Length: 463
Length: 140
Image (cartoon, rainbow over all chains, first blue to last red; front, side, top):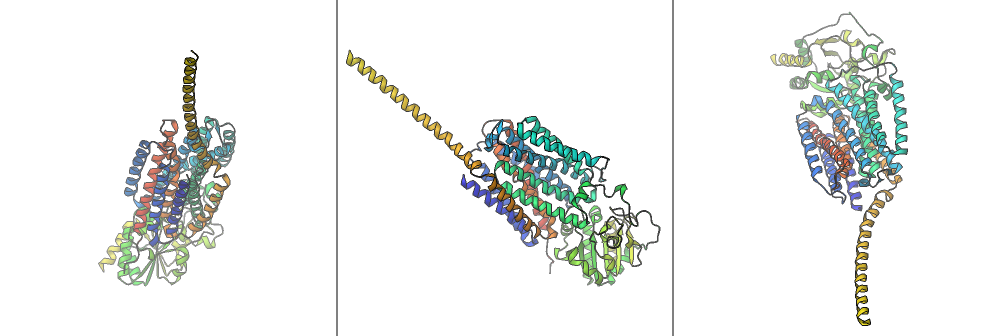
């Protein structure tokens, strides 16, 4: 059986290469091929094992699942990427629960003892894998529902929530210990059901704009679930891959939290935004703002030497990325330098904006991260903010009472002129008024982001 | 008479001996078949003690940490796509469950897990491929 161990090792190395490839867009596609090769090696190795004797169910399962997956991957629109990823995470979680159940009812197939006398170590690993898998499943279903707009994206907060969660967590621990001691089937399913409930309660209180963190966190969980099952099966490919995925999700969660200057506990405990938000400069404000039309914006940008575009989730909602790229092309044809600045938490998942811009054929070397471009705003004539708000709010730097204080922001206020494409004067997710709107060098462009870009394109073409 | 009886006895003894030999042969075969899985079981569990698996786990965490920090932020969405696809390597456990010839409840669980994991494998890799195909350099 030594060859199987080697084959799994090769698969694991392929997965590491797949992640490594993502360090640059040019090597990324090759990396993805490594990933596919690794998966093929792992699957073929397992099917070739002497204990695998019947292939009908296996082939049927792969054909059904593969067909569904292929169709979904080809049809999905890129704005719906976050909910697709959430849905995929839920499948990994549920698959982990099923594999654990299979191992529980037929332990002989996995060499972990026989029914009624499974090794205690295996029971511990199995129950951990099951619990994490089940939490990932319902948590991801809720995240999917919030991102897809099936449930309201408002955080669901009720009194005693944290006490209830803590109580359920302790109960889960008791059940796991009891299960490991008695190996009773009803306890296995009790762990599954309780973990389902915890997954729901964990994600329901988290608001829509915190979804980048949630999606990354669930990504991490799905990895740890695979890891737990890997220990049960004594399979190194599963353990190594699970650890890679777990680490990846954890790092992404950390980056997202840092992008919002919040701790992971603060996000998980929820209650940010919604009605509870108070703080500096919030609420109604009837100071005058300077509103402009598409023609003014077109004229202003055409006269400038450099423009930095700051896209946010509003651009994705309005599907404005194609019109935006057309606008940028026309400006470039006039000799204007056009660049894009992306805030780490723009969009609903890590890197979402980059994919949307890439889809609209924006070359990736015109797109910059916050640290790369933040100094350049002061030497830029026009900052064009489209569908973003909180990530440009200078209150994050100056107002200690503001809920977003300390969050890294894009320094658009340093640019010569600031154009804000917004539907209305409403405040952003954090419920804070943006001081920038009232500055002399700010022009508000009220309207739908896509319509506004199209109008600017027309104005640019007209003269 | 004696000769006759002796001959018969000898013959019956001979037959008994043959039967015993046959029995021994089948027993030896059974022992051999039993020894196979036992040795495999030892290789699977006894051969890889917990500490070996745990070592792989901890080292993989470190590899993951450094590899993921080297991923460019622009590709964080494809990173999620690809990690999502490779976490479906859990299909390995599902294949073992669905593999045995005889029908049991585990086979059903295994089948369901194969379907779910396959959706993820195909969907995850293909959607990542689609995303990566969009990232293009400036045309000069």
